[in-house]
Structure formats: C-alpha cells, structure tokens
Image 1 (spheres, helix red, strand yellow):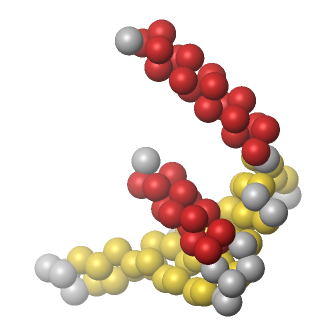
Image 2: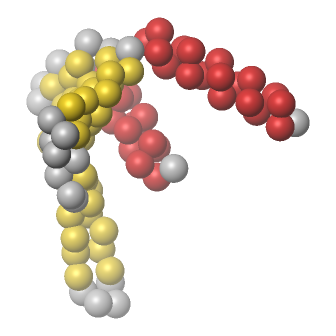
Length: 98
C-alpha cells in the first residue's frame, strides 16, 4: 500500500512539474542513528521515474505507467484504458464482497 501511495503521489507530481525535480526518500531510524535510501523520484515535464532501494524502476511517460524488470529485460505497460478496466474489475470485486 505504501508503494502505491508514493506512485500515485509521484504521478500527481509528474503532472504538475514543468522544471526538473529530484526527490530522495529515506528511512531514518533515530534510535540506531541509521539512514537508508528508500526511493529516488525524478520528475520533469509531466514525465517521471521512480527507483526503489533495490534499483527497480517505474516510469511515467505521456500518462502511461511502465514497470521495468531489468532482470528479465521486460516491462509491463498500464495506459489509461488498462487502468480503467482494472478499476472496473476492482470495483466489481468490492461490490461482490459487500
């Protein structure tokens, strides 16, 4: 859930940003005085790139999400139509659960 929250936030930032923006998110443990990189976010001209601590990348370009798998040298694409279909299926499943 935490990851999807940040992807949605990044998508919003990607739509709003005209100049380039770079954000590093870190997990900071005060008791242990330890800081670890959690995610890097790059946003410019409505496009975005999100890289997690393991190096997995998600791209947003022209309103389309690309989830990149470097190991398999493949990607998954979610365009607006795909997201609408997924939203309908989730909505139907939620109604069924009620």
